Image (cartoon, rainbow, N blue to C red; front, side):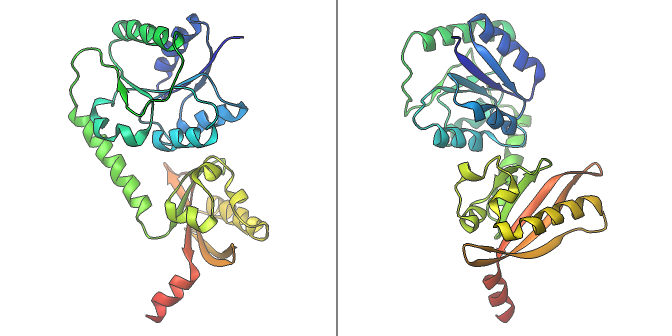
Length: 270
């Protein structure tokens, strides 16, 4: 039975290159083009190795790896970050949590390096290391444009995490892409429970119909910018605000904001 590999990268041609290399080594390869799709591909169980870019659409690599580590604690397999931004993220690699980091480079050199790397992986047992392993192919230097992109992404992550209300970002198929720590506290779920699940599954059964109606109305009626209703999460009354994410005049998803109703009352009384 062939070993299984998952390749996650939003660059179609790079996915094809890496998949072909792995298939020649006898792997059955599953392909995904964003972090959310990568999580969906894992629903049938773990694989023998994962390759993922450090910058992925929808679900970012930190969430992606955290989800895998928590969901498959008893199935240890290497996670390899194969990315063009390894050098620019050197100070964050411990937080990201991959087992190996390989910078992207010229395809001819990368082919040799990856085959050598896979031979080493295949010929020895895998033991998760407490020390990050970075495989370089010659001198590589940080690029200004990559640093600017990463700084922008970090800034946006910080806004969502520190905005002061629970925030759940929902894709157009009503599955959760992201939830900040305050939202997780309100729904009393872990990141693994929430990520890529249906947003209505997080709500009490009594409020699911109201949530679905709000999602539909802000999508179908452009004049409605938001819909507010109240939800009881574990006996805590929460104001729920549903707003659409509009990109190029199309709804690409929703933001569901959760705010403790008591804190709203206290601030008004104050």
